[in-house]
Amino acid sequence: MRIAVVGGGIGGLCLAHGLRKAGVDVAVYERDLSRTDRLQGYRVHINPHGAAALRECLPAASWERFERSCGGGGNGFGFLTEQLKPLLVLDPEVEQHYSASRITLRQVLLDGLDVQFGKRFERYEEGDDITLHFEDGSTASCDVLVGADGIRSRVRQQYLPHAGTEEVGVTAIAGKLFLDENDWVPAELVERANSIIPTGRAGMFLAAHDGLGVTDNPDDLLFDNVRPYLMWAYAAADLTVHDGLELREAVLARIARWSPDLRRIVSASPADTISEWRIRSSKPIERWRPTRVTLLGDAIHAMTPMRGIGANVALRDAQLLARCIGEGGDAVARYEAEMYEYGFAAVRDSLRAAKQFADGGPVARTIFKTVLRTASAVPALKRAMF
Ligand SMILES: Cc1cc2nc3c(=O)[nH]c(=O)nc-3n(C[C@H](O)[C@H](O)[C@H](O)COP(=O)(O)OP(=O)(O)OC[C@H]3O[C@@H](n4cnc5c(N)ncnc54)[C@H](O)[C@@H]3O)c2cc1C
Image (cartoon, rainbow, N blue to C red; front, side, top):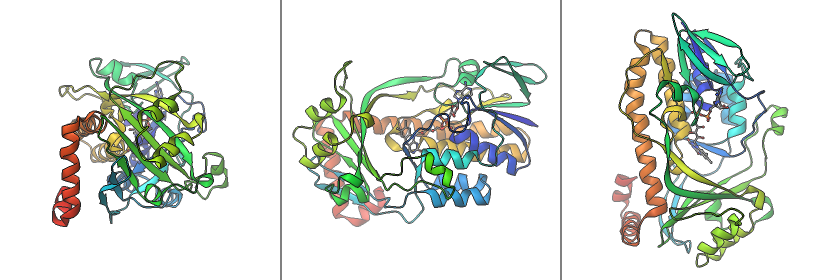
């Protein structure tokens, strides 16, 4: 069976490795012109599920490179007030979590695969084979087509035109503070990730990355910014950023009464690291009938970043689809039956988290803070809840 994967991102590349391991004929078509065409420089948190998928699909040497390339540091999590008073602190988990450089992860995933770059997928045609058409006028054929082409997937647009994403009414402004020139940042903001829960309808997430994230390949030094930094993201439902308005000023105006350290983190972050995005999420859709075309990752279930799980769910898809195809039979049907359930459950979960994070009213906030404080004081309750 010949499998064509459109999109050489996190999910598509992991799938290609899994299929190669299973001895399946797979080709990957990527719109980027080369492996260093688009270097997205932020970190991605890989949880134990994502790590298990990578470990299963990647060749052993690539998995080891991935592990070596990850930043160390705590994976604990804190809920704090806007004055940095702890509400609840979760200790680092025993299971492995990884802080991966997105750029390095992609380079590790590309190793050992013969990805066809410069192939921007346009449409497909179904006959005995499936014929893929690319914008450069070339074509390719396959027996099964996998759309792993991200949130604006063209495969999905043709295959499930009623599916897609919508804005969730939450806007985030995010930036980076470089830690090598800012040694005043409180240790608790560097040692673990933290979520700030203020009284008003907004939230802030902070997580540090320790500046590792290079592999043992000296060329990879070119791929990433190795300076340690603290990433922050402020999100709110009523945040309408007007053209020309300084993003940093917009955040500073809204956090004027927050801890001086939080305000300093925002004001000392270089302007070119600060950006704004309107958060989108996949619309719920009914199950569809399985065919020879399928989708994985953001192409089918894009979610808000509020749980930090989009890439992990894409990796889970890749692992599952590779297993199903390797086992044969009605592989797409078995894959989609499972993926539909956990994929859209993750979409709903991260949507709820986004609304809670950015738009919880004062009463809901007070209740949530009381629950966190109570859990913090009662270890058995804390264990049960988290
Ligand atoms: C700021 C931010 C932080 C995040 N942090 C986390 C995190 O900590 N943990 C986590 O689990 N998730 C995180 N996510 C979500 C995660 O990045 C995505 O869910 C994940 O990248 C999805 O993987 P994918 O393979 O489905 O799509 P992508 O990684 O988007 O890959 C899609 C690929 O398809 C290619 N492509 C697109 N169109 C075409 C075409 N027409 N023809 C050919 N190729 C095409 C693209 O070039 C790309 O290479 C974060 C997202 C953002 C924006």
